[in-house]
Amino acid sequence: MDEDVLTTLKILTIGESGAGKPSLLLRFTDDTFDPELATTIGVDFKVKTISVDGNKAKLAIQVRIFKMYFL
Image 1 (cartoon, rainbow, N blue to C red):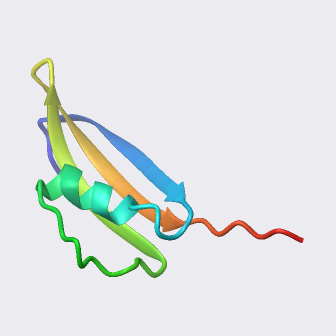
Image 2 (tube, rainbow, N blue to C red):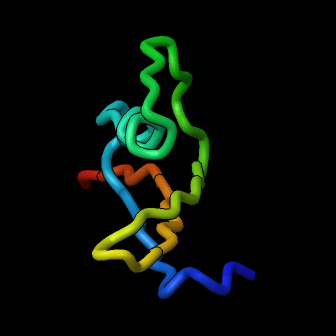
């Protein structure tokens, strides 16, 4: 376990298919962009540790697809 990490924040990103959630996740965590990124099926998950005012925080980020159905 990371003893120097002050807290772990769990972030859930949801939205409709094709909105660009995985691209946003990849850009934030790895600082890359892939225009050929495949559509996420189910859940995508990444972890990034950031420093805020000298304190480390671990971000556990999940991307989920949200489908809106109309009757």
